Image 1 (tube, rainbow, N blue to C red):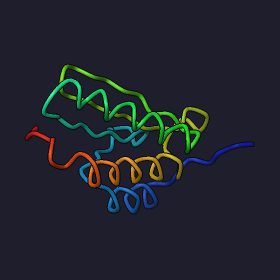
Image 2 (image 1 turned 180 degrees about the horizontal axis):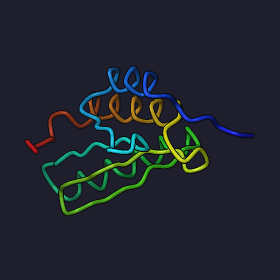
Image 3 (image 1 turned 30 degrees about the horizontal axis):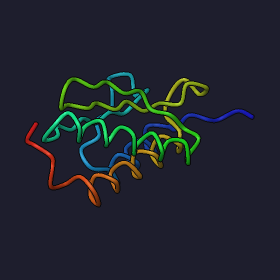
Image 4 (image 1 turned 90 degrees about the horizontal axis):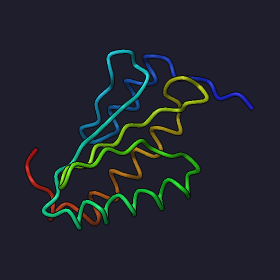
Length: 107
């Protein structure tokens, strides 16, 4: 089954529904980063995102540096962005808003 990439209009529309996600220069991925109050909190966040990713059957790229976590989303099979990326990003935003807002630090 082939997954079709989103066009620029659909990408812009998807970004408008998300909290602080940015589009790369090639319009092939979106990313966001957060700084947490501790390393333990950052790891707890990553584990919870991993659980959500499993539920969505769509897996992010993680970069963790002590209390900072960066997530990059793209659909490798489509060589770009698909609805899967925006659904997962929205679920991550909801996780932040429901469980991690009080432990975020300014970027």
